[in-house]
Image (tube, rainbow, N blue to C red; front, side, top):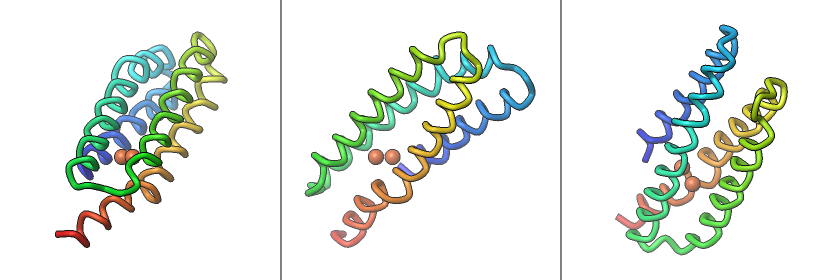
Length: 116
Ligand SMILES: [Fe+2]
Ligand SMILES: [Fe+2]
């Protein structure tokens, strides 16, 4: 899971770099095609892992993922062809992911380590 988190952060940074280089179209396409898919894959892997280890707070964690899924979808719709919205949306996505990884994901890691 940690490796997936690193990949996720790398991908978001790549979108940011593309934007900085002025490659807006490329950044949006990469975000739409790759990042959203990877996020979905990561969420389902994480949910499966938590189920396997019998994590007691799975339901709340899943709710947080679901909220983010919705946020991402609504951002995707708004961002379409709008660079300013895209930048704002990206910052939001980035902030959410960082804080989720540091606070919410950290908890099942601690549970797993305490259990084994
Ligand atoms: Fe995660
Ligand atoms: Fe998570």
